Image (cartoon, rainbow, N blue to C red; front, side, top):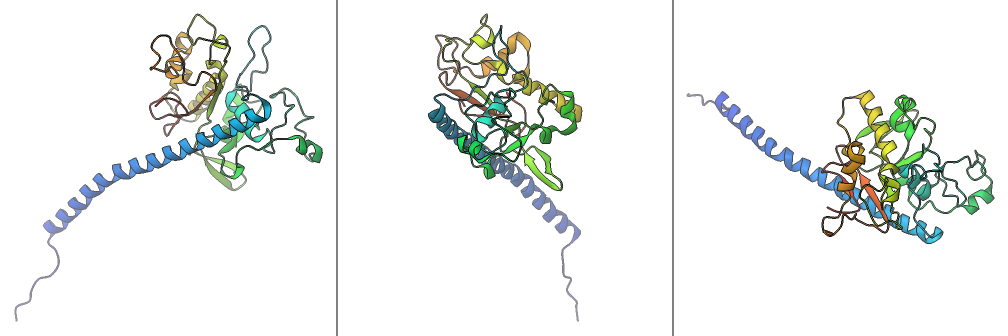
Length: 289
């Protein structure tokens, strides 16, 4: 009897594999796009929640929390506590147990943020937390940048918190044997509503938004990251022409008569996006495009 051959020939197998490889190559970009779109939507939702929390804070205290890294001359204040850190304290408290209304924003105030055990009356004076802690991406600077933080100007306060975005660009250890995916700190700038300009020759603290409010954090995170790997510079941290990149970045193009920022009467929030760099096209903000 004649025996029939079964199975595929080598040419047929190679053809099938080529087709599968082609389909996979077409599918991967689509999956990446879907994944990035989902992360962007999650980040926009986070900024919305922060916005609602800031509104609640303003209702309680009459204004949004400050974002200044230092007070204008001749009375500069503490220079290790910038907008991103103050945002976390206002919405969560410096110890994550709620904001104390007598906080001096980093100046020694152990009376208001005492070491444990914390007296019940102290907790009764607190407001908030204004965000759900379990779902807020809050991390200590010391956990985010580890020993490398010791070389930065922020080294004196490794236990201060920042709220990070949802992109989870790095893995950090938050407790022995416990790790988490951390994003990049969200930058926070409060508007100086007494000002009517964002242009030179006015000094940054005389403008509607002060670029210096978060520049120390951007500079230090950039230097810390460069100690770990070769990374690109953050465009918002470029000091050329008094950080003009920042003022171009926040300028509302619809206002042609005069350089004018988005949200001149409230605040700006900036996530560095999936690339972890402030000032690039994938940033997610509470303003603009």
